[in-house]
Length: 388
Image (tube, rainbow, N blue to C red):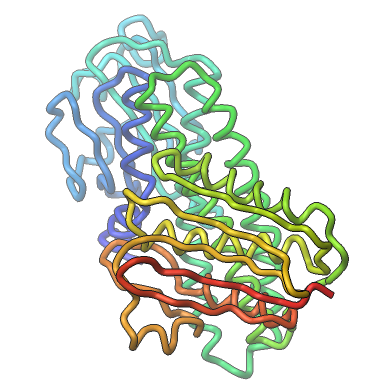
């Protein structure tokens, strides 16, 4: 992959501007960047510049003039509170050339190999040698690396899906990658995000951390959807375990609460009234609801509530998610539950178009069906299945 493609890859990660802003807010430093660092080049992939340093995305420095060049060789982070008082760097040529007193840089690894650095500088000293700041940089560098790893693996998986001869092997590889290689580090990032949210941050930084946690939830949902798609299309089958679920109402409310926490700027209404036991797979119903809610958040009007209703009546369980906004065009309604299809098409909206397909498969596996109605008043997705 070329350096220009690396810059484009970083630019496509939606949490990168938030990461750089949180760094500047938390440390008080005025410049933060993600750099692609090779043996002979230092290229800025993303930049936040509040000190008029003069570097923009795509801009280059001579790699030998940077400390990142040394980090590439050692693979270790460098943290400097005050250059003039640091015994290792007070005579170093880089601070003198670029005029900074505080500096922190954390290596970023892509597929286990050195990619570049997440770094920050400021002409003033700063207190950086503490677990809160160094842990935050490590967490963010890992998050960036995992985003790139995910994009690489999903791209490779999509290309390999076209080869029927490799289907059996690919199924095992995808499930192994999604089930272990991505889920485990994602869980660590999610836990780290919760810890970071409890650190003393100003309100703006807390909002940005909350937005990053929402991105982690989207990433987890994407992993689940791709894993299920791989099972259904590569011969593994779609599995549900139906059993009487006395806690289904709590499960539904929990899914809504998780989305409410991740999207504090959106309004949710949960109307849950289950008066009879439902034989279902709790986890799969939760996944179906989460996919429908993600779709409503992505395509619905931001100034109107997303409403969840759950009922048991006439021997059937009914679950619906509705939102206001532009109606779905009739041509899209006809193919809405096919894979890689979205309810609407707007520039910049993320997702592979698997959420509704997986939700429909979950409904079918329960002996039920997922339907949709859409007009100028509301768009409503409704799932119905027999209670027993």
